[in-house]
Image (cartoon, rainbow, N blue to C red; front, side, top):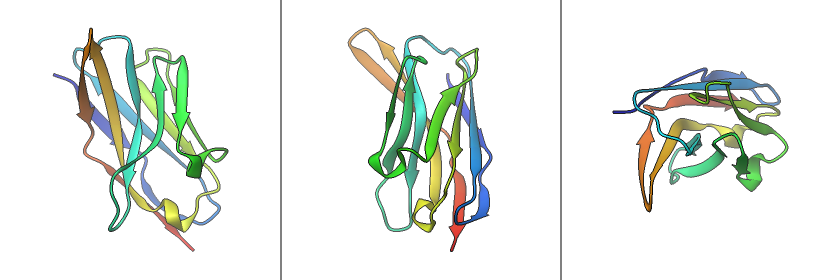
Amino acid sequence: QVQLVESGGGLVQAGGSLRLSCAASGSIRSPNTMGWYRQGPGKQRELVATDTSGIRTNYADSVKGRFTVSRDATKKTVYLQMNSLKPEDTAVYYCYLRAYYGTSQTDYWGQGTQVTVSS
């Protein structure tokens, strides 16, 4: 069983920065994709940024150039460095892990951490 524990959310003024962390525990297979989704008020959950085994990253257009996803050396912790934050970045941010098993895959989610950006 895989568990994801997030930390680092909070309240910040527009233009500020925050760093989210997510630690994965349990039986984690490689390759895998780790990253972040978010769900703003009244909106659907959307992709923010992902990292596939430290080889390939993917970003939503709305965060390119402002957010950076990375992993530690163990590949079991994923970070999201968020700079130049905007009020529209306000959302619950969810850590995400997709493990691949041949032709199938399993998704895991963290409990979410609130990020609020004030104008």
